[in-house]
Image: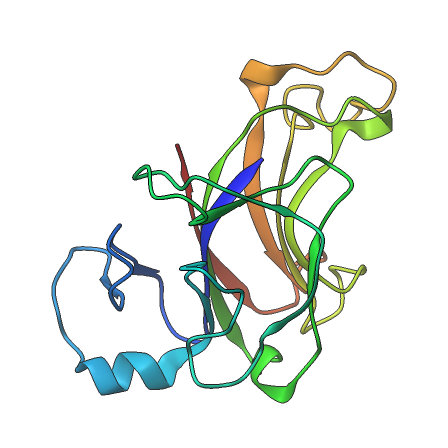
Length: 183
């Protein structure tokens, strides 16, 4: 899997253009100033030669064993390759713990699927129990295809379902907006 841009925001769903500019809303309209947009971001990883948080909250990557690779526009070292066992880690901070809503955005190029039990593929995760408010994730699997009984079944690459969760698996938590662009 290759990831070229990750943005966290504690506001409504937004879209990031491919030139790493600040987000505009889904319809492409600019209804906030750049400074308002910058204040809404809680983490912004452009991977333009570094793994620093460009939101101003200093949620920099503290552990990284992923491999730099060419990004979607052909720019070298503008994305990271994850082989299924490597990852990046960011320390917990107050800015990464939104009170009620979060929008997660990432661009990924899927190069394969986890072949082990239950076929879960994590793109982004904060915590482990998605029934707890403040814990969130982006992932994909073929669970919907197998009516969520996919464990010990063969992986179905054309039946993958991409989804996001934010402490609301029991229906009583808060909402998550997720924008995931697959290239």
